[in-house]
Amino acid sequence: MTRTKYRTYLFLFAFLAGVVSSLPARPVQAQVLTDTVLHQTILKALDNIYNSDFAEADVYIRQLRSRYPQHPAGPMLRAMQLYWQHIPLKDNKVATAQYGQACEQALTLAKKRLDKDADDPEGVFFALTAHSYLALKYHNDDELMKAVNEARRAYSYMKQGFELTEKNPEFYFTTGLYNYYVERYPMENPIVKPMMWFFKSGNMPLGLRQMEAATRRATFTRHETAYYLANIYLQHESAPTRASAWLKPLTERFPDNPVFLMRYTESLLLNGQYDEAARLMPRLKAMPRAFLNVPIQLFEGLLAEKEARNDRDAGTHYQAALRHTFVMPYTKEYHAMAYAGLARIAARANNSSLAKTYYSKALGISEYKSLQREAKAFK
Image (tube, rainbow, N blue to C red; front, side, top):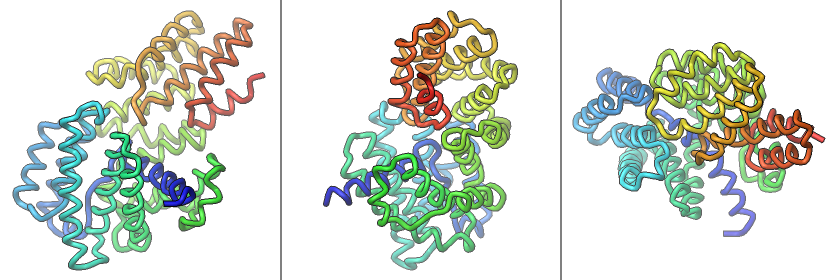
């Protein structure tokens, strides 16, 4: 593989990993929509996965795999369950192996459907999802070339999905996400611009409209589309108010989902709604998930700094956040925010040199445009 193609596929992997890393796409398509039992069983499994009731989700997944052994929904849901249950998945070797097996099983069943009909929307969707899940696994296992190869295979199915949005509204999610990021990514990473000839052009406003259409018209990808819209408004558009509008309903429907609650609390803090954010902190602290250590300390630091105006307490919390290892992709940005908080504290203490050091560390890991602007503006 040439260097140019290699770097192009690295971009492709980065995009596809983003599709599944935070919130794996929900399995769905034609048979699901015409078979009421299958449809309802998948919905119940998904709702339980999203609400962290993994034992109950397992009951429905077993029913699916028993009643529909040739359908890829069962193993794909199993992979999704493992992903959510063991954040970060890469730290659990047994769960990682089971995840890989479930992805391979789903892919085999999806390809059987495509062997009968190469344009079968259900086969296309599950093949896209399975290859994307496998790309993520290989990336986590530090097998980069395997990850790139899986991403390349996934892209071929993604392109088929571009033509299937009217046949099945679930494709509004992946198509809209692609249309947004294929334009946004090179804007923020100019080094990849020469390689973008490989990809079909996108349209960011259209991508956002397509994702919004998915939240209205899709059945199974509705919630993850809302989550991704919130992420876009937080990370790229610097619009926490709009992010909150998408995240609040998710936390109400799935009150035990730690990721949804974490991101909603973040959006409130970034929007200056400190009282509302403070009211959510006891719920967040009560969730027994180790990856929440970083955001809990960061959020306490932001409340101390922004609301209580207590730099000493804020600095203690920011340092505590940095002592915990961040989990990709969920809490890496929170380390950047902690460094930025320490930089602001140093600046108020007239320690410009230390502030610059902290802002430099923040810039080294931050992906949020608002934080990058803050760090670059400091002189």
